[in-house]
Length: 115
Image 1 (cartoon, rainbow, N blue to C red):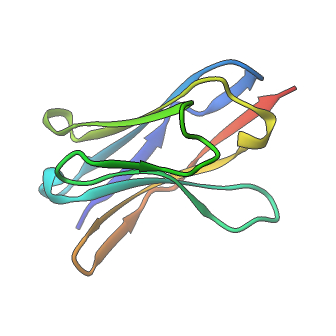
Image 2 (image 1 turned 120 degrees about the vertical axis):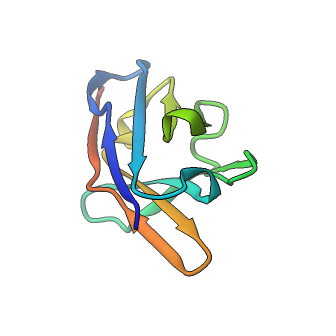
Image 3 (image 1 turned 90 degrees about the vertical axis):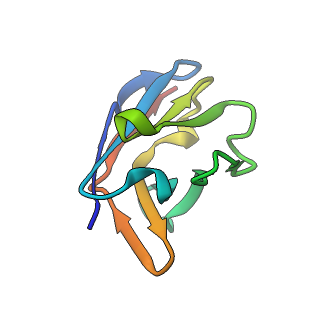
């Protein structure tokens, strides 16, 4: 069992930055792949970025060059650094942890980017 808690969301102007954190507890964090997803009102949840247990990363095309995902296994935390934010980045951001057949979600954190 893994518990995930996101934090760091908020209101920011376009062009600004935020850093989201996903803190995990309850299991061996380092074995999990961790993904950041987002869901805007009326839209499906979409993958933003993911980092594997080995540190490999992938990003949605819409955030490449602006967002960076990283992990600190000693702190059981994954970060999403978001720069050059745009109004279209406004959404609830969720992190998830996956390992084999196991999948866990956090409760989400709101990010609002004003124009």
